[in-house]
Image (cartoon, rainbow, N blue to C red; front, side):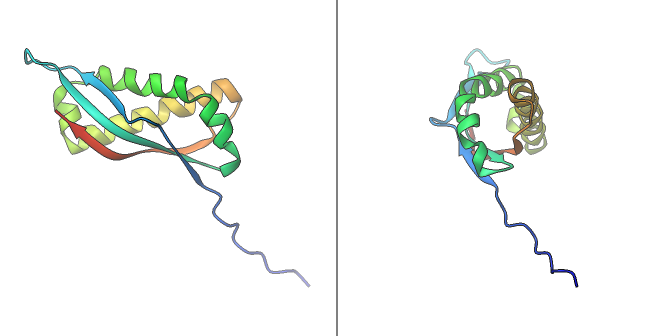
Length: 116
């Protein structure tokens, strides 16, 4: 007789960058535009928190670099914002894979997003 199998409990955890990420984006105006984003990484497992925290300066820098290369139209549109979020997720997963041998995260979330 087989034992019933139960769905594994969610082990996801979240790592939030402190402080928020603030950087300029590309604008055609004389005055520079900036974006302030609260970024959280959705970790595949809570046991990865320490490793992700250790690599957080590298990950933060990568996100800032991506945001700084984006044009105003993309930063200010909902579809553009989603494209940028996906780019950040791909880059963070790639960096973690390179540094640790595993992606460690499921996704990158923008929980607060302000631009000026």
